[in-house]
Length: 194
Image (cartoon, rainbow, N blue to C red):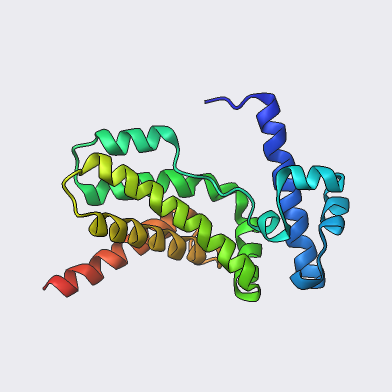
């Protein structure tokens, strides 16, 4: 699907602001970064900054990609094994991050440094988990809601582990990292069920 020019420019500006935020955080320490400095580094006005982000924490985290609509629809319609389909929808989400390794690495540092950034990232992950739980509800309406939430949370945790492995250079790409983490966790589950 081709993204309209206006939307593409908006996305590029958002990424420029995010990268400027992360670069300044690396240079000065996040607590010393101001929204004015971010706007200046990104080449936008402070007003433009606030058209994109509410504060510097939001600018650091940016707009993480959600699950693509096509992937959600395919997941809900599928009659294949749930384990396999969860991995497919998760890959559809993380593949959108492949070109953002610099951002992921910068966020990893900030996640450890700033409680507010950690909270903002965790909030975004919770939104993804809730979206996945909604997809699970459509696909498996008879599943206990607590189980759906637990399964969605577990799946997003695996995504985080894969992203961390990839960002630290433990895998050549996100898909490889996700496949490895997925298999490791399935082995844990098999061990528990043995």
